[in-house]
Length: 135
Image (cartoon, rainbow, N blue to C red; front, side, top):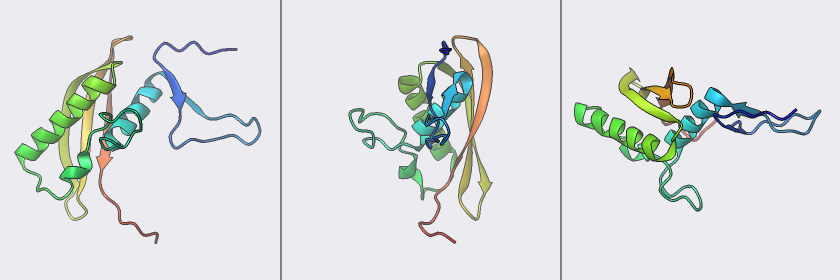
């Protein structure tokens, strides 16, 4: 039976394969949209082959102080990236708040409406930088 989801269908990221059937785990509808937003926000401009303008470049602001100006700039970066690369949704609100001052964790709250179903949804994207070691 073939799925005919009209909001989209894509691989889960990171990709997960089932040993029994040899298939990849797929995401559909709103789950696919949320996954797409996570990918968009974590991709740097120029990182994606053949689509050099895809991404958000949040890493460039990593060591800036969290002022109103920086919050506004981050919200604008996100809003623009969603506008150009996620046509399935309309962004309603983007709020940025520090979650952990000592570790530099930001929580980015995004409220949006899925165009095809007029469903209101939200997601929280935790933005932080981890060290390159395993403990």
